[in-house]
Amino acid sequence: MNSMGAPVRRGVGGFADGAGYFLKGFAWVARHPRQWLFGLVPALIALVLYVAALLLLGMYAGDFAAWATPFADGWSTALRDTLRILLGIVVFALGLVLSVITFTAVTLLIGGPFYEKLSERVEDSLGGAVKAQETPFWRSTVRSVRDSLITLLYVLAFTIPLFALGFVPVVGQTVVPVLGAAVSGFFLTVELSTLAMERRGLARRQRFAILRGDKSPALGFGVLAFLAFLIPFGAVVAMPAAVAGATLMVRQRLTPETPVTPIPPPM
Image (cartoon, rainbow, N blue to C red):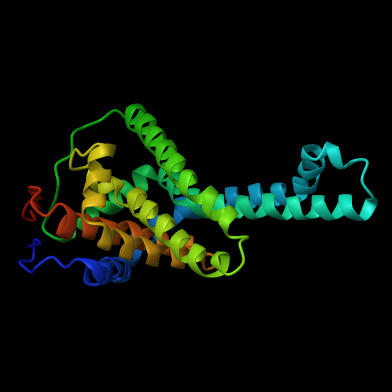
């Protein structure tokens, strides 16, 4: 049973429930537009940084391809240039994939205080936020960076083989995109649910265990977020809603028994 007293659905039903929480996040920020604008600031900063990095990568991908293929210097001009153009395209494509994968973690790192406050306000609007332990800023930042790097290593362990399989005919155009969306979506949920779970005193391994134990909503939420983030500027626009939706899902579905601190009555 969840916090609303309804039976917890698994499989396709749970997937739909997870996607529903992402949409509920949009509904929440639509009712609180100031919070949406508040949450746009870190995402815009991250976007500027990523655009600059991708522009630099595009400018120097050819130079990197030439540096990485000295063995082709003696080849015919046409063959050497074809190899290096293809390698440059692959390098830039990998950069794009990594930008999608890491954008959420970097945005949350840049805007930690913003999104922490937004997540708390979501819980306050539902009757009270979990009383979190006070942690020094430097310690929470180090922990966030460490956890994000560990998550990135997990993502790369799946993404790099899938990227290589993407060049296999038929499989690369059918199975791989589905698996890629599922993997990226799951780890997006890992990142987006971190704020609400950490407030409940859950360490990284505990957070992973909870999400693995209830994979269907984690996948439903994350896959829809991943698809939204693929839309140009979608990651910026949807980031506050994604944080709000992840907070709702953690509170109502994943950790419904966590005690909360009631909102004090107005003075």
